Length: 203
Image 1 (cartoon, rainbow, N blue to C red):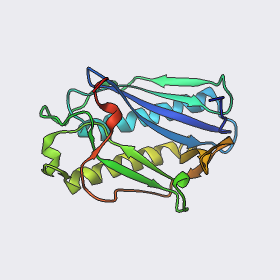
Image 2 (cartoon, one colour):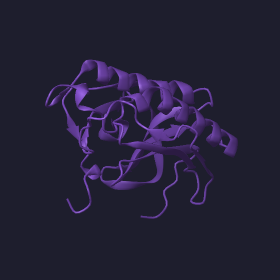
Image 3 (cartoon, one colour):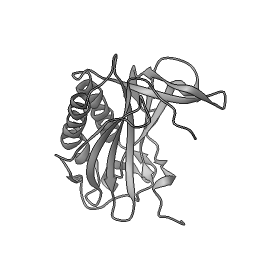
Image 4 (cartoon, rainbow, N blue to C red):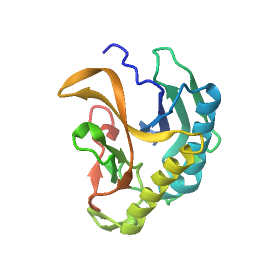
């Protein structure tokens, strides 16, 4: 598909690895005007800091956080920044769940339509964060919400706004992508979800 700009928006990719697969969480942020390299470095650093303090303690020890890369989306050949300050393994414990077992947070803009809401699949955690084989504990779920809210709050200091990015409407690509500010982060239930893309290749 041809490059599709989202003016003054950036993509932040949180890179992880479980030894067999490269894993990632992707978030989007909107600036009110043109961003600079300094802005991208600052945003990446703030995200990296929240990962270290609030995300790694929820992640299975065999999953490693590698880096956060922030890339501009205004033009095809845009600026980017990579921060590796907090690179290291999760610290939740050693009895982990499979890579595809995940908890899903929902990002809401307060508007209707699929384009105006998003999802965040957490990195693999430990069996101890389950209350039954298919239900996560509320403590774990709330800690994930707090973590993502922490990223949202930290980004505001750049300033950048956590958003939901939409590139398709009514089944067709938009000429330019649009964004919707995230107004709430929550979970619909405590049930185990699956991020199937994290299964081993040829599974």
